[in-house]
Length: 249
Image (tube, rainbow, N blue to C red; front, side):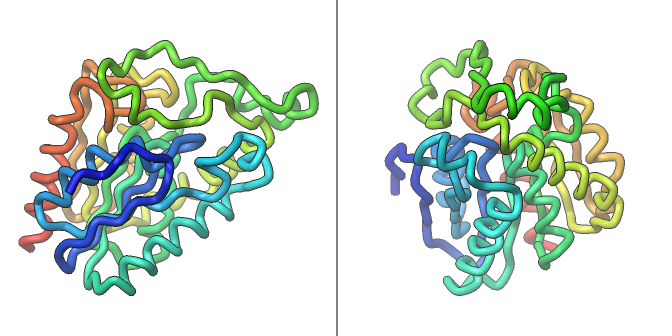
């Protein structure tokens, strides 16, 4: 089954192991489509929810905060349970990775995958957003990294609502000191050409995790959205290999 490129949530029914795919800040499930299709072909049930405030207008997102995005994630988890999944895997890109870590702290997970999850942001202006939001409402994004033939999957806002950035930082600051309590099997993926998140973020997460099984993989040719970049096939295979091992345990 091929999922059409769309900003909407998508659900692919499969086996009794469900994978919750969580997109990033200002993004949409479109950036998770190719990965979702790949994992579904391996027999997993896949659900990628549209986070609150996303997929419509940047003005809508400006009215939301991390608790709204978190509620979208927990509702996604419950949907997989209602669909008959007896075990659930959390897999998140960028902010979705931080939400995945929070999910592991609050719900039983078979495994978790974080991809370019932010601990340290590259744009220092993000840390001044609490003040900048009073000067202007939206900031244009720096989209200099080419995603070649996958641009159609990059259905994200082209601006960031500055009112939401302090809430994103609050989410990161809440989760960061608690990572050391996570024992869920974990795969941490990080691109070396990440233009949004400092690459040392991935190493930090990996070192803090207390998972009985954990792996850390970097990609030298990819930008921030590794699910649609030139090394995406390697990303998908690495995720499949890790989950295949964990799910056999």
